[in-house]
Image (cartoon, rainbow, N blue to C red; front, side, top):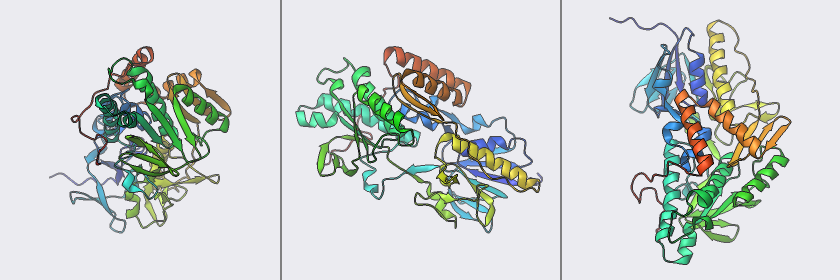
Length: 426
């Protein structure tokens, strides 16, 4: 008969940056760790738009969690979804009914799309958070050109070739810039009835400028680079309606069969299972050590945590999530040693955003780069931080090929010609 494991049990919910970095940081700690995720892989989300725009394949930016953690003997990976929490009994309940008892719990389940009270837009303006989202968007983009090729009506053809990206943050800028390159270069001479270069790509930002988290000078340069690629940038005007046939800016309706959403995020609904204060986006307001007030054994990290530092919110970016995950591991170690857990302190190393081929902006606290030099810096940073040697090599080779040829090897429509296509419900 196997004796029960007496080591403290740490349950980590979410295999993203925060959850994975916490798990790894507990490798030699006297604990047993159970990592729970609805998906079996860790996703390098900063490159998700490359999958959506056919530049990379799904395995290039994702790796199985079991493979990543195969040498860490104190970890058990569970494929499942947490649907219930009982802080009093210290249990997390999975969708299959199993209850996991914990000594310490980390919630790092990330974020989802936010449509600012218009959830009915989701079907006609998909967002980008998961590989499933990326593959669905890729299908939608490629099918739009196919529908335009087969269309005889000039107005309907124009609607199929009218693309809109809502949201001028890094994801929106990356999607719009890459989509313009696909239309003007990748698909060149591949169609007989349409000229893909005539596609209209519009980036819509409700605020006064794109990349609002960057210095204003870099924001202006980003807009200039987008417009040089052929993207029409609209700022200061919010989208007021979206349906299967287009979108409305103020009172003006624009016929567009492909609208992509990159305008907002909301915290994972898992935070609502805690009896804790949350902010407007649903993020849990945590104590300085990232624990939940009145429940020091529960920690929250990543996009699910609302953290203030020097009067400003810690941004929902990958470096912040990694740092939070590693900090939670240090806090658990401190608790096990009978010490007070330290306060979390975010170290901001700068901000990067790519726009297109040889076009990017980089803000490194006083060092501001744009254009080709910024693009090479962005490429090196993202390749370096990819999980796994194989992923780095494949991404580097694919990008080198795309750079010289403008080709995108992953332009395969999966799921059938009608799967996830823009709807026509007239």
